[in-house]
Length: 80
Image (tube, rainbow, N blue to C red; front, side):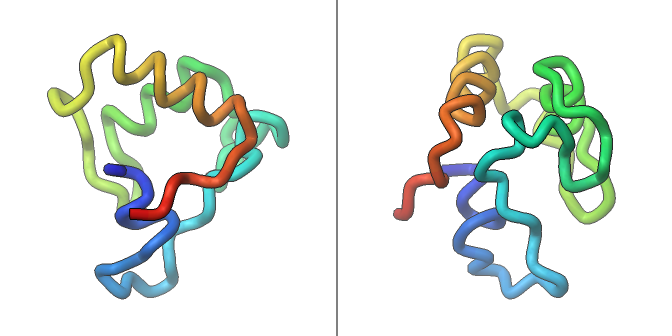
C-alpha cells in the first residue's frame, strides 16, 4: 500500500507521476535505469531517490523481502 499510494494511485497529484513498478524485476532495470536487483531495489526504497522519499525505518526485513517477492510476481500493485 505504501508503494501504490504514489506509483499506482498518484493521489498526491505528483508531476510527473511516479513510474509504474509492474514488471520492474523482469525488465531488469529500475525507472532510474539502475539494474533491478534485490539489493538495488531495497537500497532505493530505504534511501529514496529523486522525488521518492526514504523509507528507512518503515520496513522490517520481512516486509522488504515480501516487497521484492511481490515485484518479482510481475503483478500490478493492488488498488486500495
